[in-house]
Image (cartoon, rainbow, N blue to C red):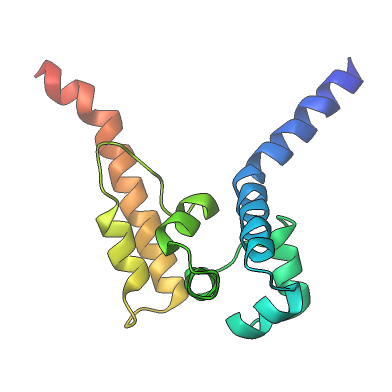
Length: 137
């Protein structure tokens, strides 16, 4: 039984890194398609080679600014990278324009952007939780 429990725990940890892993895999695919070395892309983005390597391996979560630079260097959609990084959650009912507007605002620091995104996500979750009650009234 202990083995089963540790396996479940390991799967949970891997699952929590899943979006970062898929982001890293996607970035690596795009980098290879663009015929760029890790060092060349790191230089274009303005980050260190080891940091970019950690992002590709799913060990580090890049900031929205780094994702924007990666998108620009790889010529891919920044929104796609935000979704893969778990910053913006694709929802068929919403265009995600609020999240994208926050991420694109140059007047905000990275910390402020993440704080606003967290508050926004908590409001959405609260409204979703309370929605059945509003329908019953």
